[in-house]
Image 1 (cartoon, rainbow, N blue to C red):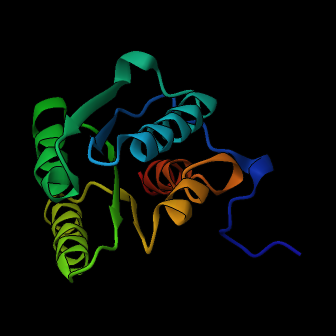
Image 2: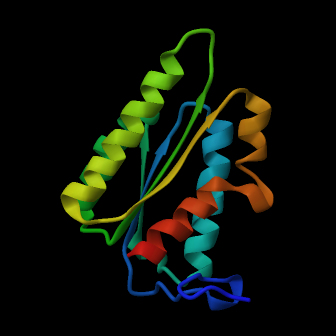
Length: 151
């Protein structure tokens, strides 16, 4: 039984008229590049034109909110996908960064009215990050779906 309003795989929305920005952190690049690949795959499956996809790279996840805001201003995108990877360390640094990033991206979405798909992994270790950045569990793909469906 399908719930009203839920999009299934067979109901993939055509996003050919959308402009989409992707902000991707380079820290933990092996993970974030896999997230980017997943996001791009979804955008192309949903018919977003290559010349309507704008990708910017940041050093780390902390800079993602700024990059998302710049994508919105510079390219007038209809949606943003934010991709990053924050792995727990020996201190609480990961918690502070994750909270700041999530709050910053939410603020961008609320202030501009442009949806931001949250593809920032916050994991306990590298193995968890790898699992969430590949195949059917690619959170970059999930963030792209969330962003374009909201747009």
